[in-house]
Image 1 (cartoon, rainbow, N blue to C red):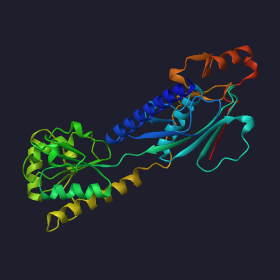
Image 2 (image 1 turned 90 degrees about the horizontal axis):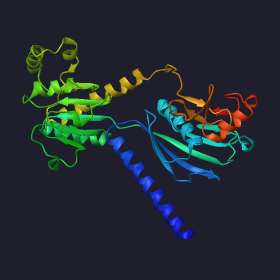
Image 3 (image 1 turned 90 degrees about the vertical axis):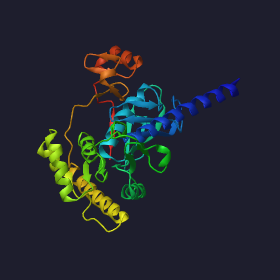
Image 4 (image 1 turned 180 degrees about the vertical axis):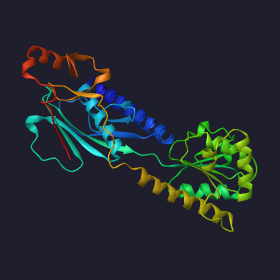
Length: 341
């Protein structure tokens, strides 16, 4: 019977990990920033085991299992911190009396007085999505550009009326339309219109309506001016039109492959300069959505907290009962030691 129960538990664990990796794959494919949390060590009693995993998004949504209420909110908070800093970290949660070793670089230690007495270590790894290159147009230059972009590490998308994915298995996302909704274009998406006179105006309108970091047009200056006049007559203002990079790339080569290389080199250069320029020295500090349980010291998400007494929030009924039995013994935030390097 015990062996059957263990097999059942293992199947449940495998299912939850499959769900985590499925969600991770979905988020990465959509270019969504998230953090992978993995339990690497436990000391019983705990409700998780080594190998358990969860994915945390920037909105704080958690998919998976990395422990109960005592650890979940703390890990959620630390995952958001890891995402903001774009740096991995190890989180160690253990009884205060057992903390003896010094905190190592990249490690965060929480000393807890939780009655369970268990300890866990969880590794938090930010999953930064690859940049996306969206090419509108079906010609030798656009195909060469997509091949080079994939080698460099871009997620690739090809859009043009009538295309079918089967014809371009090497491209991550093929759209047989100029509707870019399914391209999921974000602030690290780079769009190149290489329709070579076909659908130029419509393709640029579709690209300009997105939050793409860059919209480039492969065309001569004369052709670009004619397209801009048409877009102006359709209501596009000067600021939007001035943002169209033309010609896409710092120079146009003699071959289609050279044109593609020039375009991609310019995009990579612009992206790296933008990343350095936009990286803030300090981020504004906002009010934390987490409070500290004054009894066990764990983080409690304020918006979803079920247990509260006055201005104190608790991870579970046991901590709430302990506080209400002797409120003078506890002071919010003082029972937890958070050591961060």
